[in-house]
Image (cartoon, rainbow, N blue to C red; front, side, top):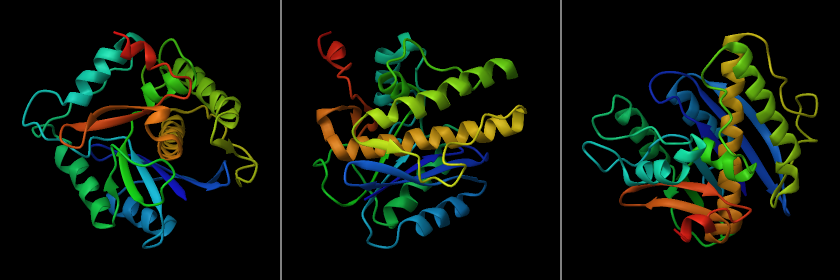
Length: 254
């Protein structure tokens, strides 16, 4: 089973891409890259996953947008439950300038057989797609009290936060189930180093976000609703958030 993460460029910017493969209970990193055009992203998907091969793709973008205006239900729920961590969701509606682009990506994946899966039977092979959101995912995966703020601010501040993210990936994801094993990855048997310049920093940011998305896909397939939280549904739009330490129990009690 393969798990793909797409940190999608909502408007015209490049997309980070990651592919993980599961062997027994261990995930191995097969590819970590960044591409500009949507056609290139879809070609990359076709290269990583052959027709009929089982896989799940997690996209950091609203690929289901039923509302003409305002905010989707999953966006509201993200603000409600993750606002305290500074992990509120950017609102999406059909009037948003990115809506056509993100919806078309979801439809293109559906034509390849990747059905939306806000519900699934854990560990059942198939071809699925889900929406992921890296910030709340990291909050639950890494037991954070606030998000890692590597997207805005001074270059030195962003770099320091990306260094933290890279270290969390190296230290925490190998300890979870499924475990991420980076020892076979060709980039010096580890993740790319955190660079010094702004453009290179943005490239790494996109790649690491896509890795988090791919891990979300794997965690969702592996555990289903037992250790994951789903905000919304197929009708309203939805976001899948991994919950390996059952932090969502505090939400359920409110």
